[in-house]
Image (cartoon, rainbow, N blue to C red):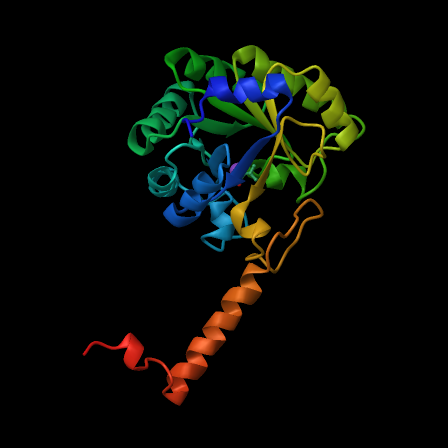
Length: 265
Ligand code: KIV
Ligand code: NA
């Protein structure tokens, strides 16, 4: 299969073919995604929660993101790799933001960066795009603003509806080629999609998008504590792994493992 590019992604949008994206943080899971033909792999800053066990994405550092993006890149031969820019790596100044985005692209060889926000980052989106760094936007619920938003919730009902529309418009005008819509009511998503120039990828945004993204560990059932409404578990990963660990423990304790078969002569 050929390398996924911006051109092949736009071709899919044009033909009405759905685009798939998985958020993950390591070589092996990225390799699995790549092998089955997932279009895009996002090195999401959700790694703060899923990989590091933190309460939110706010603690994730630029060094963390580069470390994980490098591992994912090695596993993703044909998939389009996008790296999240972590909180405070692009908010202080345009100059600092450009330098940090450039570092991620140069050091981890990702294809694009993802930034949360709308109008307030449009200047940065324009600059990045013009120097050759493709930008993915992220509107609706934006986890880096969790303290302002007041917890995980749907964004885009009532008065917030116009805000979301304005933000998407600003991102598209600034040159974002793709935008993630998170926890947005599906009728708003539909309206946005019908008027969209960019590729719209939903998570908790309903079916009216160009594609969907889920976190690897959520969809394979490794995350057991919380299950948002939009998550679908396609496997019982935690149950399968737990069973394997219990069996290993029992076999070692009973002297069953290792047998001769697993030992050197
Ligand atoms: O960090 C992440 O994994 C994300 C996706 C859920 C869109 O931003
Ligand atoms: Na993210």
